[in-house]
Image (tube, rainbow, N blue to C red; front, top):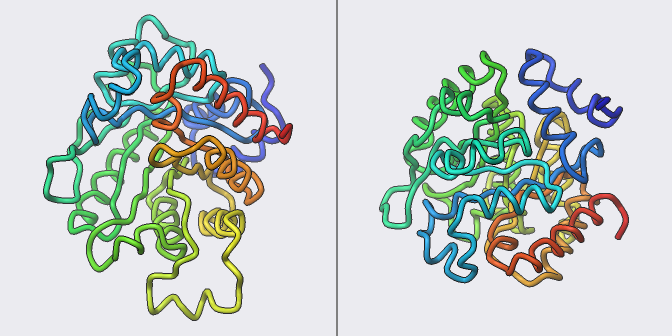
Length: 304
């Protein structure tokens, strides 16, 4: 399979990376129905750690089975599948080589009182399982952010040395941030930029609101109308080295279909690279999930 000009242009932005990392990024960018377009949709299934099995899967009991998620990502023609160690191990042999995988190497749980995550996987695990990338969550604003930054700096360096890419989930939380501020435009752009500075190849953030949280940032955002979500997406992409890094946006909590589709249109129109969407798909019956993902793919292909 020849790499398309769109993908070659993206890979050219990663000037320090070795052929192994670029090959793994190409695997993701060339996979599935969006392969070659520069757009991607990733299925993440780490909610069992974060919310518990019943809250994640009881609404669609088939989703308790790790094989269900591998097969959903493959059948829907997605770009990659991201999950913690045990989920990937449970289907690693059956689905080897069928879809790029991302090993989520840190996780939390809903009982924890601190805003932090534990390392639950390693670069060695990612190599053993044939993963294209490792994934890591940081919480800018939390008391543990500096330890997390040092941890992902070391893990990312190790991954790059063996040809594996790095995905950073960057979710502002804690410290002086208000709840509203967690989704503020200035805060989200800052969090995305921080992930880029930490060496992420793919950056995952939440779609921002038009709220400006930081007093010191107010002046920088004055005089511009931020009411359009596509313009807010464009600003986040600009904050990731002016579009030189791949940026995907979280689907967030379960929502109506129309809202999911509008988010995708705004991500597309704002220059984002795509969606990383979990609960809004796997918590629906399989046929509905496949139909939703089909429409999302068509949106990113400018067919809708």
